[in-house]
Image (cartoon, rainbow, N blue to C red; front, side):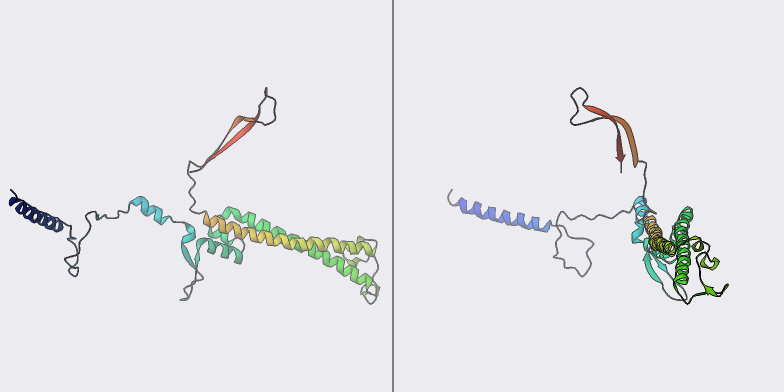
Length: 252
């Protein structure tokens, strides 16, 4: 019996070697490997080959990408490639060059009366107060300058002279005319600010509107309201709530 034990051990080692060799041969080789790849390269058993499938929905989503990432060319002519700008950047630049051009580019023609009303109204106000200021300033200079001569009478200007201006000649004192200068100059200066605000707002409107061209407003985006009894701290225990309105904004 003792002589057979070494034989069993040798037989077991032989079988183990055969088993290990068969397992090594069972590894998966890439059948599509190029000819230059070594035949000894072994791929893992868990390697998977998956083909990426692009659905029509994915294609539409890709085509309707965010407008901020899409670019266009501007000032392209006579072989010049132009300036590469995003759609919002192009809309803002057009609005900066000409008020209302950004709204036309965004196809928001109904905003043109608002743009031209705001910009044109502030410019008209600036012109009005500038003319009044100039009239009172000239009248004050003519009345205080001893060398200023009224060409219609060949004498110094007097209060009430028609050449002082239709508004300035109605004032009875030089101090009142000086107060008119201060009044109209203040409004003239503030209308410069109004022009800048109106001009900047139409640029911002064109920029934001271009960003929102592809904004998806679905039916899930809605605002609901309903009457509600709201708890009020500090109220007596008999009336712990007060009537109110509850608003709920639902977004996707």
